[in-house]
Image 1: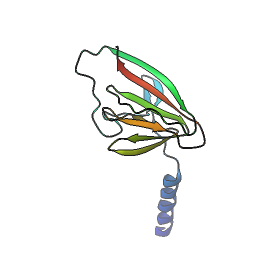
Image 2: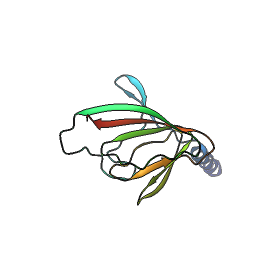
Image 3: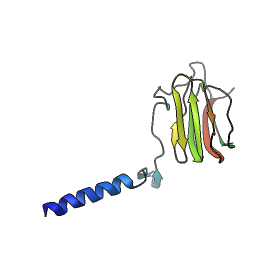
Image 4: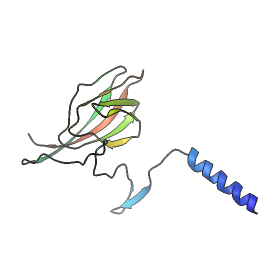
Length: 137
């Protein structure tokens, strides 16, 4: 019996480790929901904030596609940006923090107040959903 218990524990542990990571499904407001992200910090661990001056919210979203070999311009964000990689692989160079690699399914709050740029060094296109939580200009 002890041998069988040990075998079952090892077997189920290996199933858990080899299965792809999946986010738990829950019910919110009567609807089934799969949580993608729940955070108060950006990808670098810094607190998410808004400019101290009067900020009238403006939310907009885009699907950005990077062709193979494409490099984006250096930029910073002063308001939150939610990102979800839809396909391919995108690398982001955060100046002073290093390079992060994101693949399809990854979700994160983009770095704020840090100069960075994304690039696609693969031979396949990559796309991401960007949801900007800006202030009206």
